[in-house]
Every structure is written in C-alpha cells, then in structure tokens.
Image 1 (cartoon, rainbow, N blue to C red):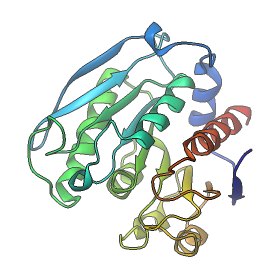
Image 2: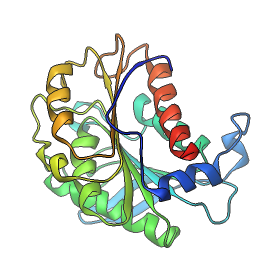
Image 3: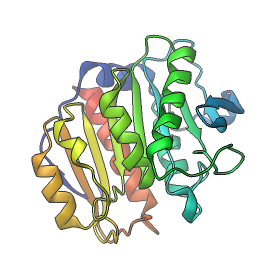
Image 4: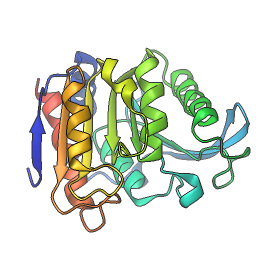
Length: 244
C-alpha cells in the first residue's frame, strides 16, 4: 500500500464487508456504462443541486454519499478530492450521490456555518434511503464536508460506515467522534495545514473502534499531487472490508 498506514482496527460491520464483496465492479468498467442522473434534491432551505451515479446492480448492497469542502472557499461537489473519492466508491459497486450544500453551485439558500448544512446532509440521506430502501449507507466527507457530514453520519442509524478526508481538526470541534462506534476511515495528508498529524493522532487515539487512520506522505490538505495515493488507500480499505 503506497501510504504510511496506522491501523487501530481493520474490523468493520458485516454490512460494509458484504457490500464491497457483492458489488465490486471490474476496474475496466466504464462509468459511461451506467446511468448518471443530475437533478435537484428537496432540502430544508430549498433545492439542492445533486448528481447520482448508479450501478448495473438493480439492488446494490450499499449506497454512498460524498460531502464537499467549504463553499465559501470554492468548495462544490465537483472538487477533485470529492470526485476521486466518489469514483473509487463507485468502482466498488456503490451508487454514489454528490450534492452541493446550500448556496453552492445551483443550490438554493445561504451558507449557515455548518448548522443548516447538517439538514442538507440529512436530505441527501433521505433521498438515498428512498431510492435504495433498506440499504446501508457509507458517508464520506472532505474537509468542511467531513466536519458536517460525519456528525450527521454518527447519529443517523441508516449510515453504516464513515470516511473522513482531510478532517479540519485544528480549528473545528470533532469531539462527537469520541462516541461514534461505527467503522471509520480517516485519510489525511501528512502535511495538512488544517489538520496536523499530531492533532489528528490525538483525536484518533480517543475514538472507539473500529477505526483506521492513514497519513498520505507529502500530502497537503487538498492531497495535491497525491490523489492517486489517497484513492489507493481508500480502495485498499474497501478491499480489506470485503476480505473479512
């Protein structure tokens, strides 16, 4: 694995392992072979611009949603980190939903410092739960999307696993993770300016299992020039769950 990994536990709930095992697509499969849907979700502050990648499986074992970084600093669902994470999840057979938080892109509403955005995440989960009833959901978020999304994911029983990318632990309260016992993967640039290695390690040590933390060597907050290592680490984690 082309990244320095620090693992406290590689165990995960059976739902995640079964999903990865039963839904994996060949890496040669083209996303052009499946249905892509651009639409608007009904959000608490108005319409939310969204995009869904579906898979050939009529009843996928798991669905996924990926939340984007801070909209006031240019973050949208088309962010490179978000796109690459979504692509990796999709290659494992998961239908993947991306959406723009309120005030970003074509989404209605105005930025609410994370409070209102939690409602946007719940609207995305509601959509997936309706579209894929009874299926567990994997929730991933990058930066601001991790700060907001993982909080909702920890609380929502429909979410079976969590992936945090570039968690902004230096200046954000992520203490809710200290009581979150769901399977968790954290991918962090070793040089992340918003989530230092020392701060991330200190938080990670106190989290309940199952959990895994991977530092991407030389990676900054945006994994610039290291996106291949980030996606390889995510892919490896998903494969390990499938092997259990």
